Image (cartoon, rainbow, N blue to C red; front, side, top):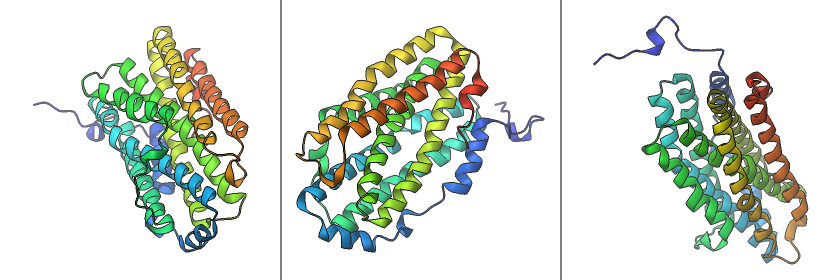
Length: 293
């Protein structure tokens, strides 16, 4: 069997590529330990919370916990396709991607075990729109890559994972979670952990914008139309998670406002869509500008 090794070929590694820059950032910024976060003050704060305040934090945390587990489990086919295509720099970055998702799983389980001391079945908090995204759209899009490594299949996986799950749901959720804690001056350990998690996720989303920009730049208008259509299909249930949460409380505890987070979710969606439009128009560099700052 003849095999080519990138790192012993004349070209070597492409150290100027965007995935390589993400890999360098992941090594510097992504190696933090969920077990090292001090949650002692968080436990004290939890004990002083009212029942409805505890409930909304359990609800938000359960959505993160299941979401982080889902993306950890579902990511592997994407890595395998990129590896089969021989894109070594991208594959190297994606190893950190999977590592970071696994860290986030550990983090939120620590919250249940050590702060809330919660062992009940928290799937009761998973609403219809949430289940549509995480139990249907996400695994279906990523599982497709096990038998289909076309650019269209890659694009649909990245739209679902990076643009919707991370770019809309996770970013909006982290904003709400951190706001609930910071505005009420509670749980400094989780405030720190959320900031670290958001930093990891920003690299994941940046890779998704890169991957989709590359794919639509290569394939042209046909793929771009399918990307736009799929993003349009998924934004409704993604944003729909927000009113489903708020409908469970009257009033919403901890000073959270629905319009603040709905507006933010739509803003993030439109921002990423604008990035991809620049790639379609031939400005691949402009689509990536500032994403790895």
